[in-house]
Length: 140
Image (cartoon, rainbow, N blue to C red; front, side):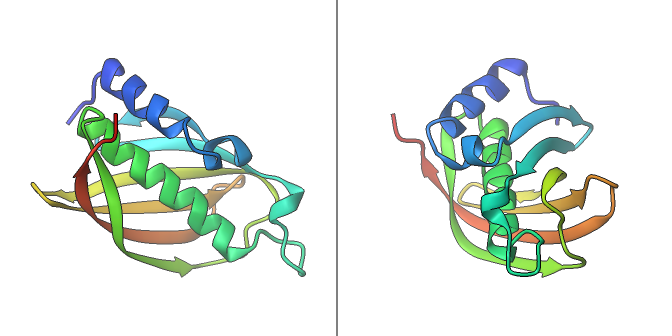
């Protein structure tokens, strides 16, 4: 389902009210068929003792991108409140730019399931998230 630029704009305005989008420089790139593409940037503050991005920071980026994608599809009228987040880590994520691809798997009246994939700047799959949430009316 193609989402209108207006609905994308409304969802991005709601996302901008949080701090994560600024801290990780999360930017929506485009919708390609049923997938939503984002770029983000992991600064030095996200580094673990081994010099890679700390796993929780990749979770934060995926959580934010999957949530705003749901808002885009629901015209900004509903927001997802997480009930379960499951992440599989495939490889370490280096500091710097990363890519995120999001797909809504199942959008019901009350529950949504979303898949997020985080890729390194070399386009290697680094983490996969399955995000399930209950849908709430968006705060004004």
